[in-house]
Image 1 (cartoon, rainbow, N blue to C red):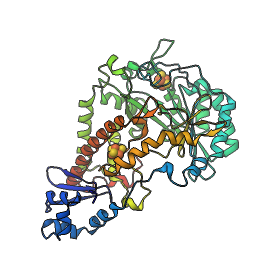
Image 2: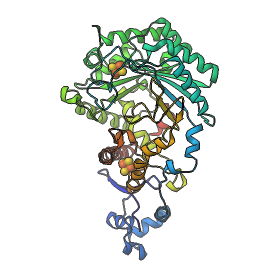
Image 3: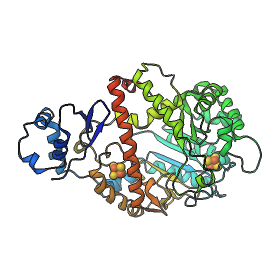
Image 4: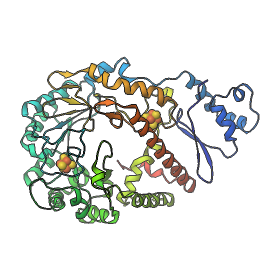
Length: 485
Ligand code: SF4
Ligand code: SF4
């Protein structure tokens, strides 16, 4: 008999069992953990005798656990690539095309993935998308989305996309001809090249705009710098953002979000003051991210950059304290509050309650490659996504080469269908192949390391989640009514 994946948690007040198969937690006040553990591991003695002790009482009170054990013996994760229907889905279910309209940028941020600190990523180049390629990319989205039921998105990305503004204008006009109002536009920008005309264009086309800004002047200008000219990137972004806000306050609140890359020394109060007081945005519109530590020598050159754990740990303590106190309908929380809420808390508390065998079972946070989105470089080559450091899987003129996608993902899926089946974090995991790619190929060792981090991180978050609910059982009711993403 195979062991049913599980994990025990102890909060200091209670013990809990978590079963990923049905995605449920069980409080274990009266149950013997040792015999329950043996039973879950398929121990023959505990399965062949009818337990009459606390284990028997516990199992009798939760018949779905026995059911889960039985169903799990027959259960296997499927491999989406070899599933009937994948080859069809890849041709007609696309939802998002992200166009890298230029690999040039007017900035040279020290932590940029195009910089010399990330040797496995492409470098800055003069590659710039031509109209013919962009139009073909729109046609590509049209052709590959015949059966897509959700909204379609055309994203503009770089480098700094605004360097190729004329192409963006042309492409938006063409996409509207093809899709009418069935298409959404998005852009990630450093906001240093905006002027009134460009801002009006973004507003008129209701662009979802992600603006990169790391916080106050010191934090932003520390690593975000102009390439060829002097001056403060922070000041330039501040000016642009104020122009957007003045041009259309509703657009600013509803369609503009910020990405703030954290670095040490970190001052969260100052970050809060910059975004909320000086820029006038809402805390929920600011996302915090960290500098990628994979395949980089960045931290060797900037040893202070990742020294912010103490500050974040204190902010996390404050977040759970606040949750446990109950915040009711008060949405005026801090940026850090939303950062932690949007992280593991939502994934844990909003986990699906269906047993695995009643879902489309695939572990990890991996998307179905080339079905949900594709990333298109200036020459028209298509990639899995903008974070992916592997090879191209086709181009907008000749289409997707499914054999190349298969060859790329097959080792990853072969690994996940085996190792994830026994992993307790399988229903919460957000790992994807991006974390396990080295020199363009799947690297199992990198996956092991990513998995250890994922399990350690969820173990920590789940204990805090359970502890919070012990203190206030309705602490997370806010998630039913809030828009927090
Ligand atoms: S603005 Fe973006 S693309 Fe340009 S250097 Fe900075 S991180 Fe890189
Ligand atoms: S942590 Fe690793 S083994 Fe576990 S589900 Fe995620 S990818 Fe699979």
